[in-house]
Structures are given as structure tokens and as C-alpha cells.
Length: 191
Image (cartoon, rainbow, N blue to C red):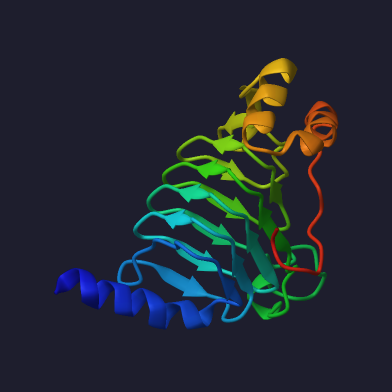
């Protein structure tokens, strides 16, 4: 009975998202999701309990993304350098687009702030503060979040993507990882 009620609540709460793929798991009772119609979620996404998403422009979450408990995403920011105006008077903040690419794992109590992209296959350690992009297949942690190491060598990454049926994306992902850059969000839904 309790599982049926929770499934009904998940389906009803999913109406606040712009798109929800199949297999979304999250707890609508313990989570605060703000940004109706601005959150686009891929397939097989798990959002741990106590999530707090405050989205002003857009949040794209790719397929197979995992969020630990109590992850916070704040896409807006208030300007602090307006002369002659207190910070709380700047109602129109610097709103960013946040993108979390497929197969990323965001650890417990991570805070993601502003216009950032967390690359495909990236892992962000617990309690990190992400305020800049994280390259694909990189393990990053800290406050502020910095890259610590690669998840796979180039050879292992080729093998990993080949086994996933995505060998055609390998060269581009290796180049993005080498450059430490991520793809910027597009206007379309998450692939």
C-alpha cells in the first residue's frame, strides 16, 4: 500500500518537470524541487532523499545519473557588484543553465551552483561545492571542487564505451577530458 502511494506521488510530482524519462526514482516527500517545467530528466535517474533543486533557467539531467542524498542544485546567483544597491534588492540574479551528463554520480550533500556542466561519467565526491565544470570521466571533490584523477585510462575508456555500444563517442570524450572542458548545454532535451 505504502509503495503504491509513493509511486502515485512520484507520478503526480513528475508533472512539475519539463521532461521525465522512464525509471525515475526519487522521494517527493523529502525533496524540494523548484523550477516547474525547467528540469529535463533522462532515463533511469536516481535522486537520493532530501534533494533540493532551485532552478531559474534550466537543468538537464542525462540518462543513468545517480544523486546521493541531500544534493542541492542552485542555478541562480545574485550579483554582488552593483554599486548603490544592496544585494537583496537584486531580484534578478545571474541565472545559469546546469547540465549533468549521462552516467554521472553526484555524491551525498554535494552543492552545485550556477552555470556548470558535469561531464559524462564524472564522479563528484560527497560534500563538494561545484562552481565550475567537471570534465567527462573525471573524479572530482573538495570545496571548491577540483579534479583528482581520471576514472579510466584512454584504453580503458575506449573499452568501456565499446562495451556500452558507444565506441563512436570515444575520441570526442577523450579530447574533452584532455582539455578539461565539457559540452555546453544546447536548447534541446538531454540525449
